[in-house]
Image (tube, rainbow, N blue to C red; front, side, top):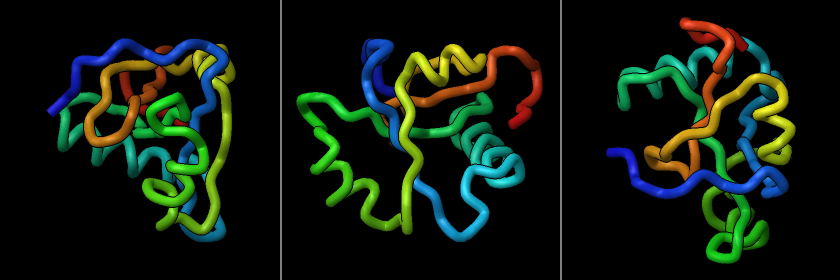
Length: 105
């Protein structure tokens, strides 16, 4: 189920958990996007945004605690790289690749 929330602003911090040594490689991102498609009907990658309700410290101790490490970006970093920002599924927001009709990392 997608929540109806406004997208975050361009300077807000975005976090994506990383499992294992490979980091955010294309195969891992593709797998996450395909799973998102199976669950929600579109290709996307779930990420977390720090804000007043969920500051970084809270995200680190709850949502990101299961990950060995995480990547940090701003919304502007991701949208500037061609990602769209849309309504969330189970994460705070979902990013997707706008420049292709099929998922590419």
